[in-house]
Image 1 (cartoon, rainbow, N blue to C red):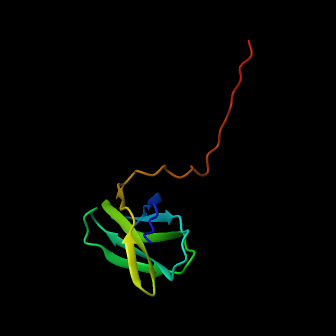
Image 2: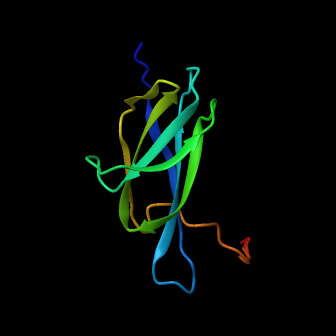
Image 3: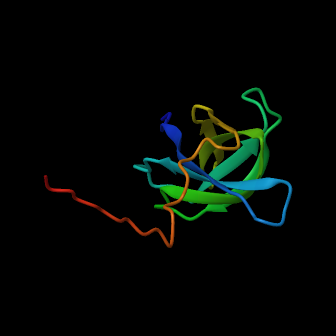
Length: 121
């Protein structure tokens, strides 16, 4: 029986250290896990064509994984496969995201004071 699942990058968060020249990012990879498996094999590459490297093997029932420390700017791609005692099943689709500085909204300003002046004639 062939099992497939849709893999996507839910979000890519970019973090900009004040003292560092390079920024780092975090990707949250999510999928639907509806099969009885031994593990979910998650792999990562820099292009849709690979080469892919094993990132982690997650326990049965896992449906997301957070990947931090990603270099910005860069492209990150992920694919996944179920595993059981017979081996590795077919791979999912490949989901890619370009991590570009400034691609996430800025944080809320702090220490802001709003003053309203009303003049009545």
